[in-house]
Length: 552
Image (cartoon, rainbow, N blue to C red):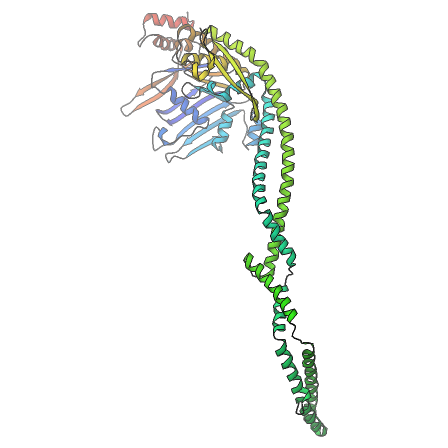
């Protein structure tokens, strides 16, 4: 439950503090005094967005802080999941700076609005006459029936499984789209891979082939020049070798007389042996070198294939081609793996759908069981509120496709008058009828909804007199199990309060300020008397007020 609300520098409020008690708290006040401003400030606590337009003083920060007692509510898991400090006293604070920056705090930890909205939705149900008349909403109607049916545990399990199911369906659709696109390029990829496989490329091959082609193309020049070199060195009459042999022979005859000459002779002998070896190598090269037209064509064709593949794929080496070949192989493998994954997902989705349909059937059965009694109780309560001929019928529609709530769609059909045709609530209920219907349905389902605090804004729209007294009685009874706060214009409802607050305006020389105070006994009598008549109230109005309040 909410214990205290503190507001600083918000709209018409300079500073305000209101302490809430258990039971039924009623808020009344002058027209335009700022009752709705309280709800706006509370909306900030619930995660609504805001801007600098709400600042009372444009150069100061706006702070709205609410303190809750959450000792009896199972929220520890939420705090742990969001890495927040848990304490039985919860403090939520919103700040709006003059620059427009907003911040939200939970027990002094900075949080985003999503977390704040999730947390506050477990603490407060806020019904505003011109904002969230959620009984119109089909999803709210289904949540209401599920609450009565005690479906929370199974529905939570179902929705978790449904999210996984939907995730797998999205994944499958994406894979199928990818597979369809891949199928279009499958033939091309296979063609490319076959081309690479047939080429049987080897790293370093290109350089070797280019060298070989160069040698083969110049074979005749190589043969002619190596033979000439061999002859110049060793075969001709005036060959280098024969001339060096003569020199070596003449030097040998005198080398024994001169040490230096002997050393030179040794070097000449070594040179002669090296030249003879070189000459022999030239001869060997000449003998094994032949012009081979067939081999030239073979090497040229191989290189043409390599050059064509490089030009086709925009690369300049066999190494790069081999990388591309591996990538194509991986793509083809992925396509094949994708096909296997699609089959696996289809089987998993079929299994998930079967289990979800079983749970959905269970949910439907539980829903259908509670509806007749709920319809009867709503009609019975409405009869007490001067709607003796009101009818409520909850219409089921079976869905073919699974939804986040099962296989059911429901609609509340309503008729306020005898013989009236049952129609959707939004098409038939007037403001007063809708107020009564909303209060009755929420009061009946309140015990099944774990909401500590229920807040009603102008639930009395379109009603007065005896009906208002009975609505006040429903609110009072509802407050036995929940903390109930009601902003009202009805003196009959106001008379049922455990705590009665009055919002009023104070006009200064500079501006208008809103404030609030808790009314004491005599102040309550006067306030309700004014609501019954005029200001100042008549003597009879004061007597009526005392009677409503049961003050003797």
